[in-house]
Length: 249
Image (tube, one colour):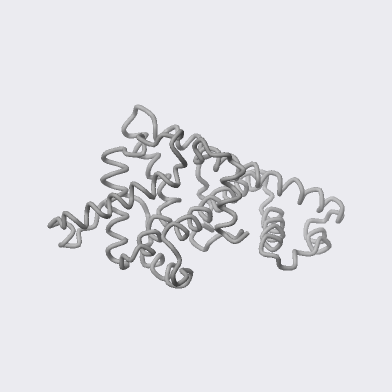
């Protein structure tokens, strides 16, 4: 469960619950800011879904920008999500696909002219193009591609929240060592040696094992919190299992 290179930043997001509550608020300004924050973390699954659906890089980039700008920011379509009818993940896929098909039918002058929609969200589409080409599998369905990237975004957000907790206590080195151990185990590789971690931190191996258990529990709490607020009426543990399976974990 590794952090992608674009997520190795330390401007940590708010918890998902707080963020989603803001998107549902009465203040247009606050809602728009919350949506911008949300899509900073979750635009790549949208782009990957479109590429897997057969769109080229330029069209997929335009559709993502238009979808976020017109449907999510201007029309506040996210407010129409009903958790009783399914997960946010499924809702966004349906809305994006509907938007894409509508745009292809209309063939507006703005689209023909290659207009770029202003979203005020930092989206590195050139990086996304290379990332998709290097990580997509031939014949993989758009749904599976979206689910994998959605799962990766959630894991990265959970990791960022956990990092924030450790850095606030000036335990950045401990966080990195424990994270490497967690990642290597998740990828079924040799884990970081407890003795090596103990030497770096100046503590016993027994203390390292206890801190590793605490670290793992905190990570899963962060993951559970995020998924809980996006899963709708679905069982959270089932949704986590589905997402981890999509990541191959």
